[in-house]
Image 1 (cartoon, helix red, strand yellow):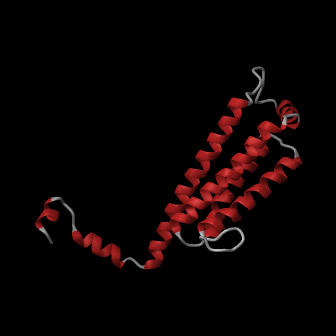
Image 2 (image 1 turned 135 degrees about the vertical axis):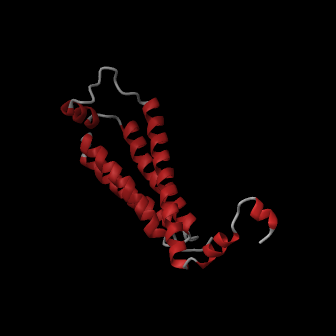
Image 3 (image 1 turned 30 degrees about the vertical axis):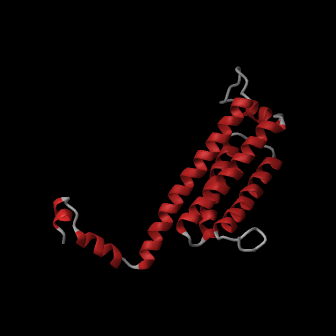
Length: 166
């Protein structure tokens, strides 16, 4: 072992052992890191887009968020603009987060994009339970997330949506 590495406190045996780690375990760790980064990207994008929507379409000052009946009526009578921002945030978050996860892992793009899609879907469902939404909104959210997962997986696999290599 070189003296400079020993002086720096770096043990070369550690690096030799990393190369001996079975490939399957390396891939699993890489997928785990990819999912964590993909989730972070998805959550960040959903938050940013929804915050942008709230800045363009602010909530009424007299709004009582604890009143379920008021919230149901409010959401049912919302114009299209705020709802498009929420749906767009789910789609964009799933697409970007799914692509990032699949791109980092370079393996199982549909599975990894699907994991991100399930996380975004869980958040969307939780939101729709807390704040009742119209049926069309819930349907559009689910369809949008599924489509985003499929597009993210295709983009990360190096193929276009039509199956041609870039």
